[in-house]
Image (cartoon, rainbow, N blue to C red; front, top):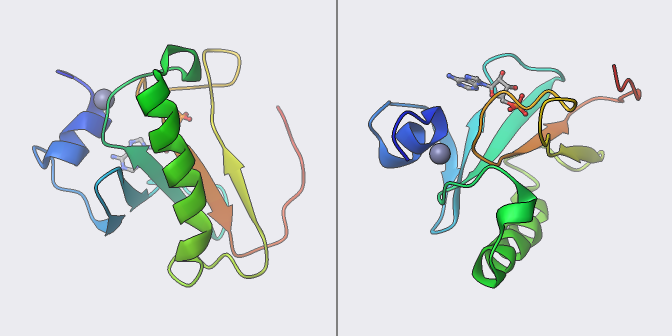
Amino acid sequence: MEDCLFCKFVSGEIAVNEVFENEDFIVIRDINPQAKNHFLVIPKKHFKYLAEMTEEDSAMLGRILKTIPELKELLELDGGYRLVINQGDDAGQTVPHLHIHVLSGQKMGWQPA
Ligand code: AMP
Ligand code: ZN
């Protein structure tokens, strides 16, 4: 999609340091980390909301969720980890391309605001 930062990362139009890539997604480090490790898992397909997903998209998202724990060394998941998907304004979604935040490497509290 034009004018989408994450689509530009996926296409290579904007260079980004990918820590992992497969046919479904890329993983990058968040520029503004909220934990010792803060990764963004970015599906290659552009859509903003879970509510927009087709059956094919939901199979793709299922593959992504299955693959994340398989990247445990790379993402430092051994001590536990948190996945976050912000949806819409109240959640603070700033990039309109669905992505999964992966937070790891430290004990975390719970602070919704
Ligand atoms: P969200 O607020 O859930 O839409 O998440 C968007 C995330 O993208 C935020 O955590 C930002 O820090 C992150 N972000 C924005 N621009 C960049 C960038 N150029 N490289 C890496 N992460 C970015
Ligand atoms: Zn996009």
